[in-house]
Amino acid sequence: MTDTGVVPAVRFEKARPRDAEVLTQVSVRSFDDDSRRYGGLARGGPPGYDVPEWHRWAMRRGIYYKILAGDVIVGGIILFDLRRRHFNLGCFFLDPDHQGQGIGTRAVAFVEAAHPHVKKWSLDTPAWSPRNHHFYEKLGYVRTGEEWTDEEGVRLWAYEKHVQPRPERDG
Image (cartoon, rainbow, N blue to C red; front, side, top):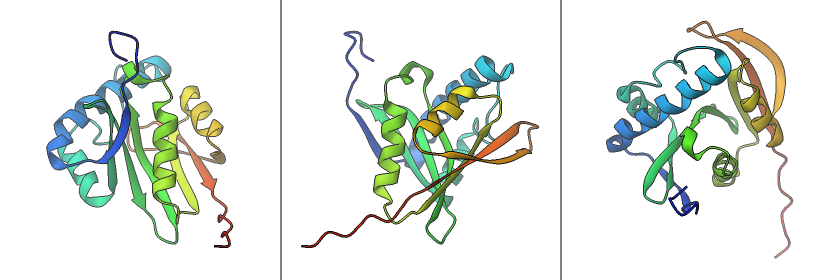
């Protein structure tokens, strides 16, 4: 939000290696804020979230979009193609100062629309994050009931969303 209270235009672009430093800073602010707020942890996020090289690796391995408000990077969303029209939303973060403005909802809508061939979306999120659970469930993701612990000892819940093929229109 600007000093005038106006939310700048939001857009999504492919992340480039030169964005890794800024994306790392935003990722750290986002994940650490969530960890403090809901997990009772001083800091924490998925392995590599706080290392620029991991973000560069994700740009090579997946489809990495940076989220911009005006000309400022405010978040990122990383997709991994698991084949057979199944994508994993592997990492999604938004600067705490830009949360609650509909940007996250727009980001998920953007990636789903940008990849209409995808019929199954999956993700995992910490079991201790009710805000994330509510967010993904309002967007049509369903908890599959799977629970496990990641390398950092955080319990995770798995979510999936199945997209029905769109009917073809007669020309």
